[in-house]
Image (cartoon, rainbow, N blue to C red; front, side, top):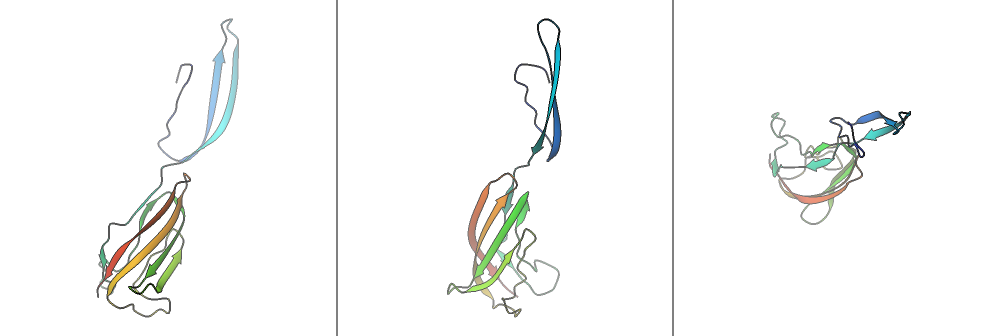
Length: 133
């Protein structure tokens, strides 16, 4: 990169050393460097509307697809507003069981998630998921 205001975009997150070499009008050079940390954009999404935790290996869990999320929590509520299931962590998922480990009844449930991305972006989403067996 050459110019008065160089810009660099990184393809991968990580820690990089940036070195700047400048040359004055009389030919003298100076070198300086700095370490920077590059973050990727974060995202979190669930395209699921239904899941069937019946141990057939197909669509048995309800989970979010995330990218560069560093913290996440989710709460699942029944129609009456009672907490059915909760989890914390980026690898969390719901297997269709309640907090006691019993199979939750078929029906529509509300989920609420909160998450924070490595880029500092905060997420709060809610929606419905239909559980069938």
